[in-house]
Amino acid sequence: MTALQWIGALAVLLVVFPIVVILLREVLAAVSSIVPSVRSLADVTAAASKDLDATALLLTTEDQVKQTVAGVAGYGGSLDTIIDDAE
Amino acid sequence: MSGQAIVLVIGVVLIIAALVVFLLAVIMRLRTITKGLDVVIGNVGEILQKTAPVNEVVGSINSQLDAGVDLLEGLLVKKAGLPDAVGLVDGLYPGAAAAGFRSIPEAAAVVPPRIGEVYTKGTLTLARLGREAPIAAGNPAGFPLRDVESGSLQARLLYPEIRQSRPERMPRSPVIGTDSPEQYERRDDIGEPRKHMPGQSAGGAA
Image 1 (cartoon, rainbow over the protein chains, first blue to last red):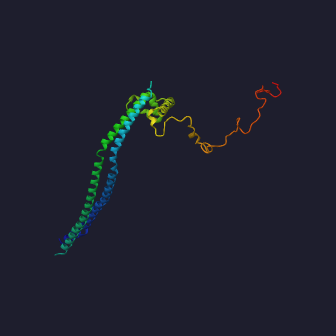
Image 2: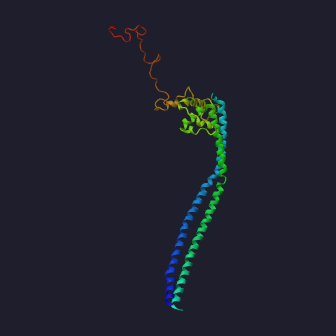
């Protein structure tokens, strides 16, 4: 019985403890590898958000396109008057 | 306490200590990750907010451009006729005739004529646009018609600058005429019948 108790105690100290340490180190390494990815993700999203500041200019583009098409329509009307139709 | 119990207690204490140390480290990393994800979520929210009106605006722009395309295609077909319009577009953008016109589906079935057949009409159209269109009279560079009286300066400037524009006064050459300083006597044979007709030998043995 005493021998079995010694085996059990030594197994806890020499087998279970190293296995627990190895598993915990792997978990810590995996969690640590996420940190730089999250940081780079934050940088990328910040840059993407900054790049999209120009989307407000789409409203100006819309107005410009409306004016341009209106000008083209007026010019087309003049052309329609000036140039003869095909036979 | 027996030796086995002491070894067992030491093992358990070491395991608990390792759990505490590593789990604390994991907790610190997870907190860092949480802060980073908070930043990401904020940025993604900004992106969503900034891109929300894009669909509506781009749709409006596309509808405006579609109207412009329909207008120009219709005008081109009306003025040049469908075959020549297709040929003109295919001449400008080779292969575009296969797609046809957006508002005129039957244009895709038209065999585009050779560009040489519509070239004259296109040139006339461009010439009329540049020289006769009243809208071009407002050109800030001046009236679109070329000055036919003194419009050769631009062409002369293509050559070396010797006497195109400066010096403006150079000796006249050649010096001929009644006011030239060198006067010659009029030859007597001018106006007389020719002594030798062209194509005949000097001896007259034809």
